[in-house]
Image: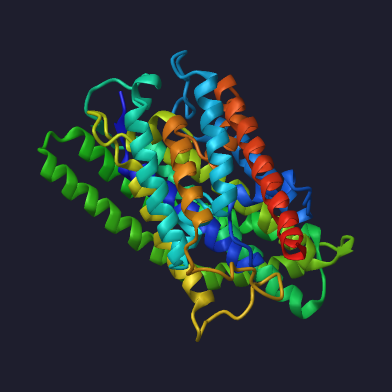
Amino acid sequence: MIMFTPTTALVGGLVLGTAAAGKMLLTGRVLGISGALKGFVQGDVTSWRVAFVLGLGGGALAAARSVPAGNVFDVLPATFTVARAAAGGLLVGLGAALGNGCTSGHGICGNARLSIRSVAYTLLFMASGMAVATLSNSAAAAGIAPVAAQLTWPASDVLRFGGLLLGSAVMTLAGLAGIAKQATQDGCVTAAAAAAAAAAAAAAAAAALGSAVVTLSGLAGIAKQVRVDRLHKMAVLLLLLLLLLLLLLLLLLLLLLLGSAAVTLARLAGIAKQVRSHQVLGLAAEFASGALFALGLVYAGMVRPTKVIAFLSPTHPAWDLSLAFVMGGALLIALPGFQTVIRKNNIITHPVMERSFSLPRNSHSIDGKLLLGGVLFGAGWGLSGMCPGPAVVAAVGAPVPQVLAYVAAMMAGFWVEGRIAAGSEVEKPAAKAA
């Protein structure tokens, strides 16, 4: 049975948004899973790309052993064939390469920039995904029972873990920012100091969030035990969301205090081999954002193809709106984060660890490649219930034949599109010469 889990979906989305905004503000780079993976196929093995993907894999391994929600990965039935998964992966790879993005690069970061291209791409892959999932009966292939999705409140330990994860995400990135700011003045920082400050920031976040999360988990427990009608349950849900937003505001107020604490720890750390601070801290930020993104995906349930397919099947009895809460939570953080960067009178003129922001230059024109990419990406998504980020996380955390076939086919899709694009670039000069 499919469970409608708005609370964990929202918290997981907040973690995703924090990772995306943090990566942009610290390193100046967009958090795009397909773009990071496509670079490897094209031979662009830069250090930041390696650090980010390693973080994604590390987060997957950590989530598989730490998220207190039972089996956090799907056990796919035989009816969900390897051929279906591979076809979905190939379409997603082609579509993401043509459209230059996926659910993270366009769906979160692009929409947070209010990019017209990203909005169009997102609407297209959503519509295409729903159409293909419905027409190909992906729900039946994934073994989804034709019964209504059940509204489910998280257990206290699951909610507590989500609060600690969100707090640790915010404070770890803030700690790295504080160290980098100090390093700009000092010229260098020790690797030991960086590690100590980041760990201390995460620990402080966990301690600060403890009592607040216990309160939230208590409310969730009450909502599970009290027999009330659906309207009352939704009212309790709204109360939980408001309390969560209040908690987030309190976390933001703690940033300055913990940033200063991180800098102090960096100064007091023992003398170690000195390295170029922004190189080390930049790689640490890439690794951290990748790991946090993976943890957020697992906590939100987005690494489960069944849950995604249930969202993409609006005519099925088990239609599940959890994914909408994930996207909403991610944009709640990413939108203000990106807007501080792209506005004309921007608050932040350059990232903490780089000299300039690396933002897409073309945010408004809609062309045929973008439209075709959105349709193909959505078709593969609807067919398989997987997109690049969740697929890579699932392949590392719980490798099964369908997921591995999907990832291999997706990488092949990146390669095929690259060869086609390279061929068209060669033909253009030849045509002009003729």
